[in-house]
Length: 152
Image (cartoon, rainbow, N blue to C red):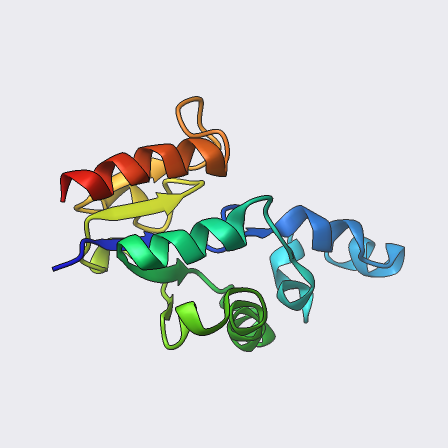
């Protein structure tokens, strides 16, 4: 039985900063301090470098899901995240998107996330903090996950 891996979307698979940089100045001013609430912002995210290839490889090695939080005050975020997953991750992510504000309620072996909030800190498996000194980007994460797959 394959081990279960959850991967956060924003800041791990998708580069949230790319969409912020593309906002028209008037929209950026209107949503200053709360860019998550900009309607449609999640549709315009670029993949993080190496994320798409890493997801595909992880999907071969593990039982992989995208585990993300969608802003409560931005209803389009929920559908935009689905469209992003379909567009960038394709068939390997079919029906593997979980949107939740309580990541710790999901049972699995690994959670790759850039922040310990929204239940990630309490996740009962192993939290791999993307962007940390140990896991600064996808190459370091993949080297570690390949070793873990060999142990299984």
